[in-house]
Image 1 (cartoon, one colour):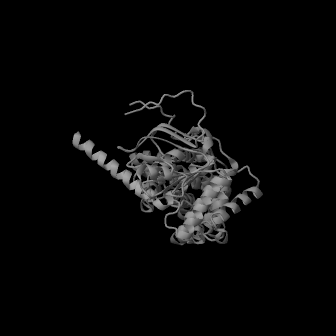
Image 2 (cartoon, rainbow over the protein chains, first blue to last red):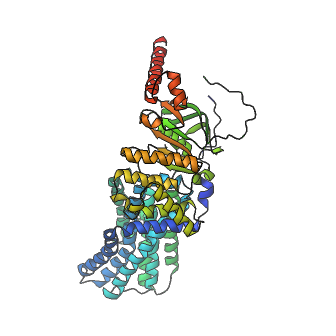
Length: 263
Length: 265
């Protein structure tokens, strides 16, 4: 049977490629407005990293060196974990509530939607990281050789990476239960292998090789560079570029999971 | 059984929707079989049939969100799913698709901004106010959508579709779960949209008394179009008093036909 078919427009690549600033800004504002109606979530996102750092500071009461290294690493890990969870649930909600289908049947580019989310959660990540970094450096005595601004930069990139990963995995979760389970599946291995618990060079060679391929390793590495060096080292620049590159790559993959036409 | 209608150089279809041989597969199942029909502009066309007959799939195909559509499906003179159609069609899904954690007005503001970000704020505000008035939710504009009743939430969803004065409104069961007064009001609104704003409406329903209020009807069963015409024509053709009776007559005939086909096979 032959049928004259219109080119199956499975994606809508043409308008999706160009970013529309006002649609992106409107989306970011909408995501933040949704959060504002949920003050408890905001409080949890902002306060928990601070509380964990305080906890950690007194867990390592006798060895401030250990607090320095683990504390700095955690400053990178928190935004990644929080944004991963928030984004995966938020996008899953968009998918299940039908609002995503509605948006994609309207003149909204996929890049607008993704950039809107990244912008909104990025803004929250800035607040979260600024508070946590400020608390750690000025009140808890975290000893940083380099500039705290660089810590903040890495934290922001980590948040972006978390947003990207969350967006991506939400496509594979059919329910909130599944989405939450992706957290241990995607984040825990990275947390174990990123050098937080033991230097990566001390791991089994196979695991060390695996950790070389995981983005969180570079996030933690970047934090440690700032910790020990006054200037921006070449390693730091490499780490930052790798984390940013991974975030963009995964955001791209996330965009590919948003389909205008579904079955 | 493909009947090729001899096609002289057809002038650009004046119809809002023009379908020829439209087939949709979902997984291994074919849910729509070689549909051919038209939806005239400026009228209310009712899409009726038992649940599961493919109404929603057909609507999704027209809106351009359904995958694996083959055949010719033209909407407002463009192939269905064309990017330029996205601002010209208003679509309401069966389940209200709005953000529960935003107020009614915030929902509308956001979707209005997505629809046409270039418009002046004042103009957009006016559009939002009009949509609120259309669905009679002005008094609830500052309530969270999640705190509204089911009927109110589906009216918010409808209001979103009314933004920007779309030429074609595709409404999937817009009156489900509404009380008789609201249903009457909505049907009055639909007629008003067609008459004064020149909109074309494609409204699905499985409530047959609503069918009487449509200009034209498409009766569906099992992924096929059973009948296509005005309510009056359908009643006359089947010799019945109501569209409901006409529909049942047609279904029975089709079922009987299926059976004879099976036994002769």
